[in-house]
Every structure is written in C-alpha cells, then in structure tokens.
Image (tube, rainbow, N blue to C red; front, side, top):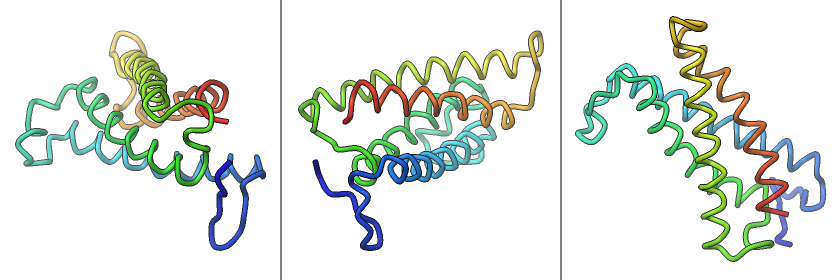
Amino acid sequence: MKTKKIFGFDYTDNKYMKLFMYLCVGGSAALLEWGLFFLFFSGLTSISFFSLQTQNVLAATTLAFATSTLYHYILCNRFVFDSGSRYQRGAEVSLVFLVSTIGLGWNLLLMWLLTSPAILGLNPMLSKIIASAIVTVWNYVSRKKWIFK
C-alpha cells in the first residue's frame, strides 16, 4: 500500500481520514461539476467545442459530469485510494469509468425527475446539487467495495 500523507501527517491506515479526504476531493469535484454545469447550461462559454447548444439540462449534466469525473479520479488516486492495488491500471480505469457511467445514468435520471415540470419541476441548479449528493454515495461505496482497497 502506498503511503498517504498530507502536511506531513501519515493517514495511510486511517479509514476516517481517508473518508474525510474523499469528501474533500468529492466536494471540490462537486464544485467543479456545478460550476461547469452552470456555464454549459447558461451557455456562457465561448469555447467552440462547448458553444454547442448546451441549453439542454442533460447535455450540460453529461459534459460537467465527465470533466469532474476525470478530475476526481486523479485526486482520489493521490489522496484517498491505493491505485493499482487490486487491478492493473487499465482495468482500474475501465472500472472507474464503468462505475462513473452508472453514476452518470443515476445523475441524468435524477436530473430528469427533479427538473421535469410534469414531475417535480425544481430549479436546475438545486436539482444538480441534490442529484450530486445522491450520486456521491454511489461513487464512494462502489469504488471502495469493488475497485480500490
């Protein structure tokens, strides 16, 4: 197992500190995802790739989720999980993206349910925060149980 340290404090075998670090990494990934969602949904960016019609909630959700998932994977490997301890890197990345794709499915379903005028009709940003909180539980449990040690 690789040593996990922050500010000289070794928390390699401290499951509570790892959970705390996961929440910190996840929190920053959520902020990134929400910010990107807002930009994509509002159409405020002028980058040609993203200036496609992102007024659609599901398209904005997908773009923001994919970007924040990559960010989350990189930081979790550094601060939380022991990358390569259970699977080789290629298999590990594939499993992370499989779990993330399932999480994206949950995210999209929740966004549709929460924002649909015929169902709940909530504000898209509030819906994004609620969906992110629910999907965070799925992400942590699935990564901890099936991918990383």
